[in-house]
Amino acid sequence: MTIRTRLAVQFMLLASFILGGAFIVVYVSSANYRAEEFMGRLKDRGNNTAKLLIQVDEVDEHLLAKIERDNPVRLPEESIILFDHHNEVIFRLGNVKVAPIETSFLDRVRMEGEIQQEFDEREQVAFLFSDRYDRFVIVASGRDIYGRSKLRNAGRVMIATFLIGQVLIFLVGRFYAQRALSPVQRLIHDIEDISAANLSRRVQTGNERDELAQLARSFNTLLDNLQTSFQSQKNFIANASHEMRTPLTAISGQLEVLMLKARSPEEYGTTLSSILDDMHALNRLADRLLMMAQAENKAPASTFAPVRMDEVLWQARAEVLRIDPGYAVDIDMADVEDEADLLVQGNENLLRSLITNLMENACKYSDDRRARVQLRTTGSELAVEVEDQGIGIAAEDHERVFEPFYRAQNTGGAKGHGIGLSLARRIAELHGGRIALRSSIGMGAHFTAHLPKAA
Ligand code: ADP
Image (cartoon, rainbow, N blue to C red; front, side, top):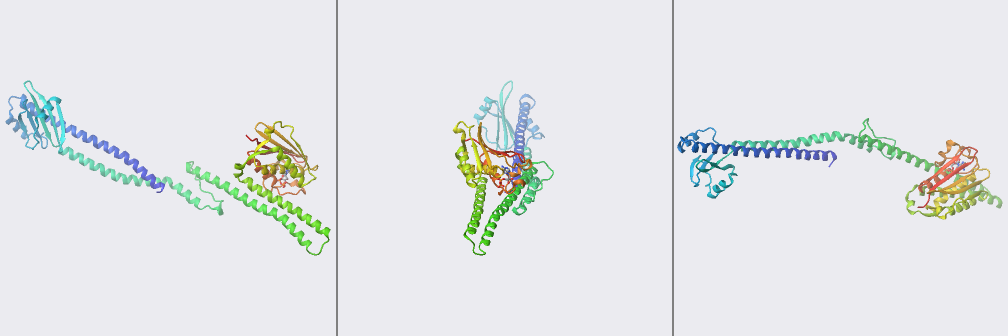
């Protein structure tokens, strides 16, 4: 069922509940009023008849029967019977057949004063009438033909109004629901037109400030984010393949030249070692790309274990020295007093890669090829500071150096692919930390990786 039909049905049910309730109240109170009013009239008739017969000496049964025969206020199918204290009928008016009246009933009337009854669509009121000399019981009954017919008619009108009202309410409800939901229809239509191929499309938000306009705006923001992430993924793949192609082209070029003619063993040796260098570089690039994918994925967080950062620092140092034995890395951990302060909840491989990248950059981009590393702990945090006295980074590049494949202008001949820092930042964020940078051109660089301590 569509929301439109559901709303119309709910609207109809609600309205029928209210309308039906109101009609029932009106009908029941009219029915009660009719019965009460007719009983009142019956009683008046009984009273008047009794008064005439009992209290007016000139009037006897025959005269009263005569008077009453043409009385215009007589009620339809009326019957008035008067009983004396011996339960004898002393007067009877009306020739309708009424059920014989039991003595026990008359006794009850004498006890209770008045009894009202309704049977076979006839109302009957029996009551005590006391005179100076006797206590009479008057039983007056009649059929409220007009009152009942009026009530039946009103009931029929109510039922018809109710049924027609239902149909009208449903149609009106559907119309309003359709009008209210038309912006949703438009939204659905707009959304259906959007696919991965045309992510630049946006849904209309209209000028209104209602919930649907808010939904449309949120959806557009989602599309903005998706588009950016699609674009950066595309760029990433293009950049990654470009970075891989460069060493591969160099390798195949060198091999082709080598195969042109027979070479001396020294020449083979030199070319092969240059190819090996390129292969190493390629290998490291592949490693980093793999780590990038790993760091991108939030799942490793579930496999985190306590890692000792001092060990990570020593391992990273060894790795940097393996990359280039000409590099120097000084590590200072004098600040750390408690071994428990050295623990970080994380992935050891990723953390080692983070520190290696910072250390390698410090050596790579400084003349003295030296990195100074200091481990400090503050409160709930562990900070690894990596400092150098190299070429430094211009303020406007402080953010961009963390973007994948970005390399600043002043890198000179230093080899690189521009993914070390972006990988380092992702790893830090994956561990709930961050990387801060202080640097300016010619003044060296100071990177600090802030990581939360293991709880
Ligand atoms: P790569 O070093 O492979 O180029 P990174 O992502 O590690 O890639 O670094 C990005 C850029 O940031 C580098 O190209 C360089 O311009 C700059 N950079 C990184 N670390 C330093 C540093 N310690 N000193 C100066 N510049 C740096």
